[in-house]
Amino acid sequence: MWSSGRRALQDLMLQQQTAVRSFSLSPALNTVIVERWWQVPLSKEGRPPRLHPRRHRIYKLVEDTKQAPKQKMELILAATVPKLGVRGDTVLVRKSAGRNKLLPQGLAVYPSPENKHMFEEEIKLLREGKPEERVQTRSGQLTVEILKKSHLNISRMPSEEFQVNKEVVCRQFKKKLGVFVPPHALSLSFESVKEEGDYWCEVTVNGMDIVRVPLSVVPYVDPSAIYQKQLKARIAQAAADAAAEDEEAAVNLVDEAAVKLVSDAPVEEAAVKLVSDAPVEEAAVKLVSDAPVEEAAVKLVSDAAVEEAAVKLVSDAAVEAETAKDSVGEAAAGVSAAEEEKAASTPTSPDTTAPPSDSPKKD
Image (tube, rainbow, N blue to C red; front, side, top):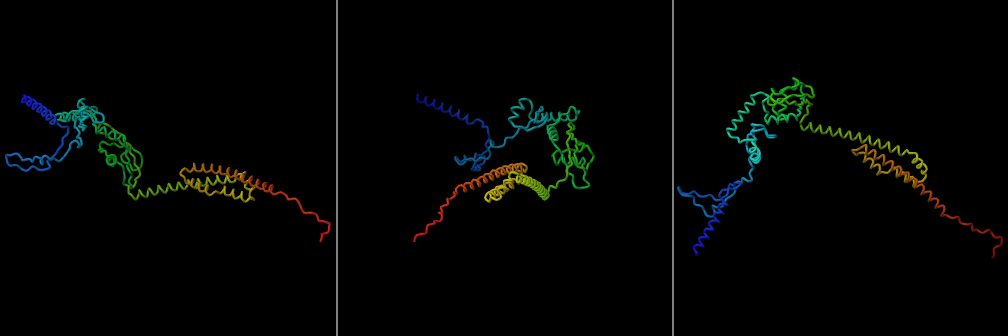
């Protein structure tokens, strides 16, 4: 009985070990490349190498494919796919897109030698056939889209021999737009020109699509640093001159407004009436010629919005004139009230001197 129970326990343990072993031997999703930290010594001929029980089980990581960039899948399109290509184009796509979309839907096939040969023959027949039967390639479609959005500018060189012809335009296409245009695929609206202006040219892409590209001959601009520095200095000087003219015009406008406000009739009469009064005169002079107001006016004149500053200053000057008028009236009223109060506070003393007595003075 003891032996049978022991045998059953051993069978159970073996089953558990087998299950664990099958789980541990399942294929991993990623590959990790390692090497032994300690090199295994050479063994004798015909004998296995002798491994150390602990030292030769220490490994160091060489490469983890999980962190490596994922490679793309190469496919041949069996149908035209927007933003990817046309039938027969070889493209590189993500593995997920190829396996989940292109291959199941029949939009692409694997680039096997048989498929490559079949599509090469098909493309050759299409290119040699009639123009109506041809199909534009994906690169041709991209070239057409780029040319439709382009505008070619050619700088007019400071030389008497300068002229714009077909060879110059082809070189400028390659230099400015990065598009190679052979001479036989380019047609100009002129043979050669030297004058500045706007023109146009037509480019034929793969003998199928014709795109009209605007072309302009512009003045030459020296790209050197010295010229650019001088150009910036000229622009800055012109901006400074314009700002100075605007500031001067604003100052003149403010002066005219101030003169107009100072020559106002009621204010002038009040000033003439109170000329003899020293405190009121000083107050009027202080209000009229207030230094902070002038400094604020000059500061506001130098602002970029010259017209708004001038309008604001004119309105402020009008408010100040009204304030000065009110303060002058208050000062005059205060002075007259003070004089009346002073006159009222000094009473007339009665004459207490007795008339001369006729009686003789006693000894």
